[in-house]
Length: 583
Ligand code: C2E
Ligand code: MG
Ligand code: MG
Image (cartoon, rainbow, N blue to C red):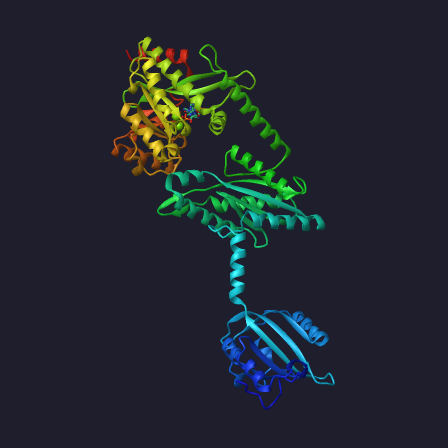
């Protein structure tokens, strides 16, 4: 395809041709795997080879006499071409990557080399351009880079990419005296979704979260996934904390909407911690650590909110350490003679007869160092540190001992409900312990009831289910606590060997004013009854709530309306008073 052979002598450079004949050179040109295009001194095309036509879609006839400009994709700035021509005039050579356009309009990257051919007098005769389509190797390289720097699930930048970009942004901010905000976002209750509905649903939620985050953050800001349900946002150009707070509000609002996945309406609200450059740290590691502790603070003050890092956060961390230290000491010091722990008891009332049918044992800690500490504060720490094991064992022994005391005082039809944490259920040792405690106190299995929270029960590991089954086979009653706060379906409950369902206090609180809560209670009671379960309502505080729940057919009521949790002696007095009343 040496189309313009007669009109020009494109390979005239004698120095390079040596002893080769013109026809050999001509064949080399025609058969070259590279696309070659030759122009004359006015930069009009005088020759192209077959590979050129294959790649660009232009036949020789179509391109001859044209300016190679018609191949340009228009992606490059005029400045780019200016530099290219400068280099050609100075060095007689240029090479680089450039995007061109095929005849059909599609664009592609090519690696282009241009040489200038001059005559003996140094006058430009021709320009010889040779090039390759490099899309394939560029794609492969891009894909590799993408894999190394992105999270495969959400396609967001990963931790490596985030750290590199944050370090870069910090350098610019330091140089230009600008502020930067770093946000760590952790999803509330995500573990629940994963544990109860499975990882594929969890993955889907993470993808949706990533998408919503990307949509609500400016494209110049960075959104990355650090792993699990933890995301980060970097705002590299802010005028002050107020801007960061505004963005955090927007993130909260955006993520708070429900996610419809596989017929489930799921919620994954965020807890957000924010640290600022330069006040909260000068480098990426410090800023991340501080945003992280701010995020934990956000979790501890009730989730679905944002908190700035501040020195008081250190105080909170110190406070937690103090609590953990004191708890370790207290658990180690448990003995039959003295103990910082005690049990309080709250009655559960049969809604129809008004009789006390059970007492829930609730753990209390009176620390000589810290005073009285709420279980809401220390149970979580006991679970994280493994202290729940010995502490939970103590609760079971103590509860059984006190049932015996009750029986000795004539109350032999009252069951005691004991709260069991997920950690305890994971150990077969629980069975031995329950058997031992019952036997030592001459009790029947039906004298106790174990409460496990909904999310614990749904961690349907074989061990958990196995332990629950064995407890049920022994004749121990089982209840699902705080029902409605997890994501289990009532249908799933069919597979659990439970008898009681405790509707979470949060639904009871607004039962008269919030139509949703009322509807949830009504549906739970009706469906629970269909499954043969006894329904217990927690946190009944008012007469109106009681009436409402009775109308819905709730079987058992528990709450301040009847009694707060009381120490053993006071609960005995309470039981005696009610007994006298009903006689
Ligand atoms: P829970 O098992 O759902 O216990 C019910 C909680 O609601 C108790 O709080 C109780 O005092 C409170 N409550 C009962 N009626 C009312 C009411 O009418 N209004 C209001 N506002 N609150 C009411 P408490 O005693 O602070 O216990 C909190 C949680 O700590 C328990 O929730 C349980 O999850 C955990 N917990 C307590 N003792 C133990 C224990 O021995 N072992 C384990 N693993 N967890 C325990
Ligand atoms: Mg409970
Ligand atoms: Mg509860």
